View (tube, helix red, strand yellow):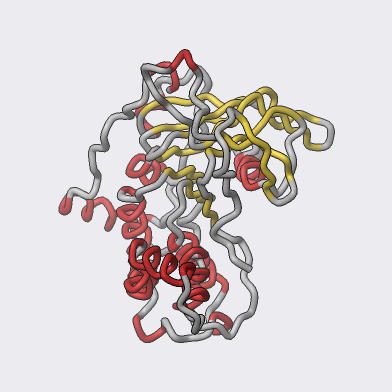
Length: 323
């Protein structure tokens, strides 16, 4: 089962809100003319718009009139106490469960990638498994494998070249190497890896897709220090938007340029990384911990001091009213 793309807006038409289906859940897709006239001088379009979201768990509101807007090229750290609904929010965004009120609107034609939490026992080589994360690539390969070279074949050829399909295997291998896989292990069957290494395969598969929004729920849980540092640097350069859950404060500070604090059924949003946002909130942030042991943490400290891995990220360019 393909695991990278779960949501794709309807690219046809230009109404403000168009119905679409996400895994059978009726949501709204924002068309190309979804800009309110009031913002004609500042043409902003939400990549994802969560508006007045309500969700009941056992009859008790987990979300109550919660709202969150995500724009292109934002890296948002989602924080909150355990049990506040962070993973549930991801499932709502993906359409796995239905909200009891409000709407979740994805901009037309945009896609979401996420990391599967389970993986089947497969004889498929690790490299091919990761390549399956790019669904468009695989679809184009099927078209190009046809003997008949019609207009559809030539269109597929042009698109394949545009997305650098010929370099896809090298990109997949780079992802796997960065996450700790030795080069001689890339041809090993998925079933030969342990559970922790399979989770790394799932992560690489999600990263392989060129998604507009990447959902990551504790992505460093199964990684060693070297892989964490690589992932941190990779995500800091990620060309799309990211919604990230992590209990690693340093990891959040290195990646996030905005923090969304989930508490009491609502979501407050602040510009900046975790440390910058912590002092701005009127509600106490959850206590953050490091997900690495003390010895690797000391190594990480010296690595940062030596290489300057901590970057100063660009300020959020969106109008202050939306932050």
